[in-house]
Image 1 (cartoon, helix red, strand yellow):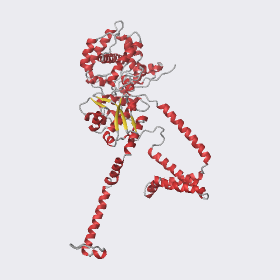
Image 2 (cartoon, one colour):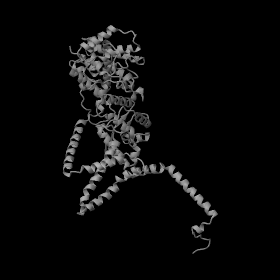
Image 3 (cartoon, helix red, strand yellow):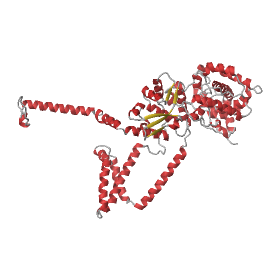
Image 4 (tube, one colour):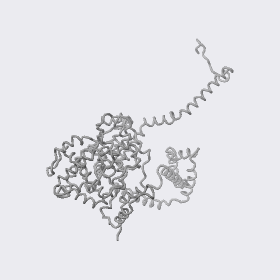
Length: 578
């Protein structure tokens, strides 16, 4: 008999009760029944899906717990039985009753039976084991799906997008829209990572009300597109990307796909690999023609390895002098002269090989120091995330222009010194939506974490309310909060991240902006003064004290002994002119 994957969610309830000790009261018969059922049942291919509803990582949770725990309504099993959320249970049950009236020919328990058939599939969506029975989980999905469906209808009613082929409950929906949809707490709660239910559960509910699943998907997609206009903080001219509901795991996943562009990183990496392979082949051909003597390279390499271990004293200064640009120019000039003399022409190639070997060794050492070993895709360093603030960039001539194409439009034009940033609307829902999407991105997305990198970029360029005011005046930030300081606190509060990530087009912007900023003479002079003047104030104070002491000694010496004999100084007497 073929065996399937053990149902860890089913067994976890027994493990949780066994934590009290070996002698705890455990229903052994029930445990054996679960084990036998799990081993004898064969999971279908559709249940072999990766988890997509996670617990928020502790690193993010400790920064702001209220942004990740629902405050009004619980959707799904993670926060279902929290006492402070019981107030919304009557509204959820009322939504289920109204759904029952919409399907008179069928009973909701038939839908519960359908959910029981998909129990293992439902559990597979959740990363944390669920300590609920299958029947409890099925009824939970029914009630939460009914409430979520009705809330989506409320959003559609508010936009005037209710389809005519759906039975209307306008009186109740308008009443609910006035009292609850205006309350942003519910909107924030349904976007939290731990407050999700699988999309297929909602689609199963709609299939009971529509003749076909295709029509149900069309209706659901129309509601979600209206909701996405409220979800997306970016003001985009172009239409939202076409998203297949079959590909979306839950509502937060749908919102993430709307906001974050899909990058094609694999083809780009493959292209880079091909270039490197071609470069290696050409380099091999070049080596075969030049036939560089191995012993010269070996000798220089051994000497350099010995010197490279000495990082203190004059050796470090000698190494910096060897690789300085002026010395390279001085060395290059004699090589040109030597190549013109027939007798000395034989010395040209050995000298070039020596300096090229030294140069290669120096570059290898710099690469080893700047990047960790053994990583093909190396994460960026902390220093690479640092970027000057908006005001600092403006003072060196950087212009800021808004774009209407979302995150993918972030760009820096080096020729015109213009930084292009997407227009973003900041309201009371933005922080919670971004925080939960960043948490979902860190747990689920295997590739580049685009949204995380964007929040790091905004956190870097916004330091104070002056930066926010500048971006608001340029039309990049649309502020719906009370003050610019609240917007600055919002971005500066989003500093926690699970891991560093590389996003090619955003990293290029950061590198180009830092390069332009550090290349300005104003910045160079400021860094020079800070490093060599303000940073050396102790040494300068010590030297000034020594000079003052010497002058005092000289003055005392001149008062005792006549300094005119030692230092012939002509004095001008009053009224005497040569």
